[in-house]
Image 1 (cartoon, each protein chain N blue to C red):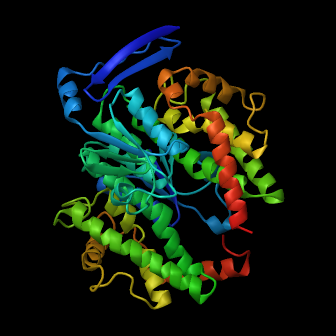
Image 2 (image 1 turned 90 degrees about the horizontal axis):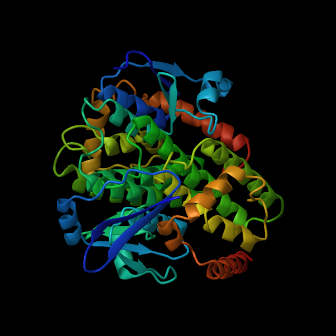
Image 3 (image 1 turned 90 degrees about the vertical axis):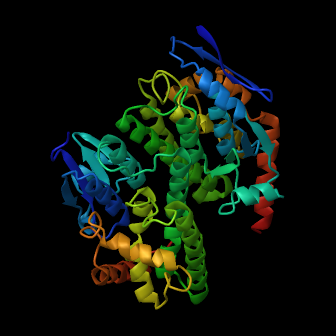
Length: 232
Length: 261
């Protein structure tokens, strides 16, 4: 089995990098973490390991690079199969978890980003509405997936917990910077409690960035984006 | 060429016969009696649309596995109540409904099919190979097809740039195929099913747009693969009818152009 022939190339503010690290932590896999200083330019190792996208995270196992966070999480689950399972065992539950993970990446998280980057009050309000709609759907999904247990994955953190939970730091930063409560006792009581449980989990707490530090980073990114070309 | 007729499962509604034309002999798992009994009790419905490559890829997977299913053609301009009930989040096809339980998103559906009907596996066994297959499937959907959409509705410099991007993306796929019979290795699998958008749909789109960048000269390996894949019966059966498709694309582009004026 792997010793430290497992490397993760990442960047501390990235929720996608968190996914890979949480998955490795769940499996108790030792790994070397390399912080990419993306503002200073991408490392040779990153460009060599992910020539197609040149993005983090990259998992390097032995000499094999694996890219794309959800692909990495599934690789980790399938490779270290003696550890706790990340994906559910039932095919329909697996499909459900994959469906919501895809939704989070393609629809929900981009709306979170839009709240911060939105030019104009109308655009901001529309983005907030989209995020809130998504949270209502996810609250319902939590009920169905968890079946009364603590996490989407049941008693322990699973694939969908990882896929969604990694966005919590940015969600909290967004709440702080926009002055609105996105997760609330009134609208999303189950998710509110789940969020605290997720962030305190042993596999998560050391890789979850501090909200204050992330907020400072977020302000800097937005200032830069507003100074540069208009966002897509 | 070795021709292998495989009867994988049958039921009163549909007899599935997968005929694989292969250059090399390929081991095929025959369904056990137990699986056949389960297959008889399974109800599989696919809500799809004839011109959608996402819908066609699910049909291809079902046919390659010999899974009997009922196909429901959706009119996307007037979506059925059932579709909206089965996919309330996206309200899109394809949706697979297995014994009343809906699964949406074509890549999610493909993995569900492979995990539920374990004959003729479409994903590789090795975790690294699986990761590579998933990586390139995402690349096709999130990069190639997104850029293709952009190119379809763009004009002038923007269109030129999009076409250049597509060329670069296709070059990456071309080198991924190098030295292999199929994207999945010695026989057709998950990544070929995802890439099947290149077999008929992509060429039709190019013709409708009056563009000529996807050619045998520029992409000999991809075109060699297309030739092999197109010979497989299950693929031929899932072919999008060309003239109807060209007309459909042209009508949609016209509608888009008038809407954006």
